[in-house]
Length: 141
Ligand SMILES: [Zn+2]
Image (cartoon, rainbow, N blue to C red; front, side):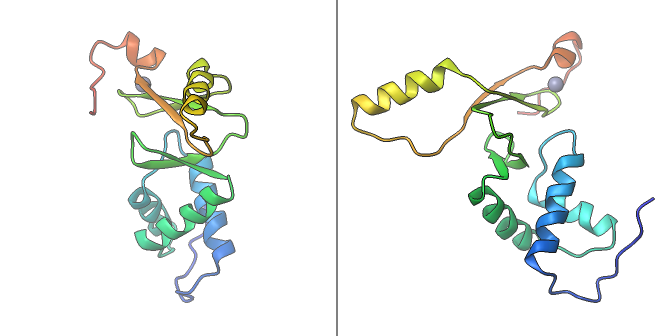
């Protein structure tokens, strides 16, 4: 069992909060919202308000360590070779894939318009194998 940390230092260092957010995302089975992260911190006795979480994940996204899953309005660890995300509409799990032909087509189409792609994630929504097998899989969208 994890020891409870005190909240005697409300101005935690960025590095501490970064490490905590990365740990929560690594432990999670699905992407976490800022409120999920804040709630998990509270469970271990640490106060991190959602605004701190937003600032932290923005920094971690810029560093290429965290990815925002737009479909879920949540965050996940960034896989270095991930080029696209498959988001399950049943359980909200996310699988990343390294190659995605759509991206190549998108780059080609963008180049034809003179647009240079710099950053972006392709997200596709569907059902994971577990949810496909379950007729009762609720769709949360
Ligand atoms: Zn699923």
